[in-house]
Image 1 (tube, helix red, strand yellow):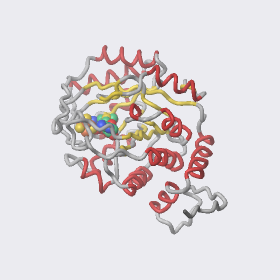
Image 2: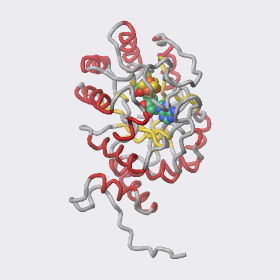
Image 3: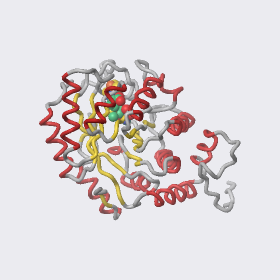
Length: 331
Ligand code: SAM
Ligand code: SF4
């Protein structure tokens, strides 16, 4: 067996490569470097911009569940899939406020409200969501919404209501997207992201790995994030939760080492962003999560349910952070 001899470590960042390399070449070079070099570079950059021991706790509330007309191949809430999820109408504002208050009491500094809509429609339901945004903002929490596609005037109304961020994930590469979702286009996503940015709301935009995509798809997804102007301030990286009754229920899971590489490369490409280790943590070992934190992930979603899927308990997350000597961000 030939063992590669260790050359002097050459940490690779997006700025230390020949300028004739394409952006994708440079992302590939960062991603595929020896793991010790990649982790060192990610941790170095992470420390330049963040407290490496601090993790932002977030809570995601599902304010309108199921019966979504979109055909996202991963999603339990799509009417096109047969996950068996019982749909729920838009929650009452008081119940959402209670969830946000409980989230704050358990250490979350960001409360995200997700609705299984294709798009926002003007009218009493959107007015109720605007009230929810005002209520949560009044708790002195970061308030995020993820409601599907938005028009510019709706983004402006959310901004005026006090919205901190809007989540709208690109999920994967432009070429793989149509293999996962056919009821909308990548450009539809980009149009909503632009409306959000133009309204002065910060963009939360990330994706999913483990859907059967190639490594190139993963890197082209990161390249697509880099092309956003401004780049996202919040990047959720989801590991597919295979949902029975969805087309992706038997997708091959991502190699855990590749998950660490994905987090570390995201950190290097987006030094100031909050990188959120999001869906899929219930299937991750504590050791894998710890490596993702060292690689630069600095946020998790807490609470026993993430939208409609299981998530580690708050107690388990608290014990993990304690064992790691890490703390929940407070500001
Ligand atoms: N309906 C809104 C939309 O599609 O923009 C809300 C999205 S909500 C934040 C769901 C997000 O979580 C999706 O954009 C996707 O990235 C992620 N997600 C949904 N189902 C998932 C699953 N089974 N495994 C991993 N990530 C999932
Ligand atoms: Fe609907 Fe969002 Fe699920 Fe897609 S991810 S089916 S848009 S709820």
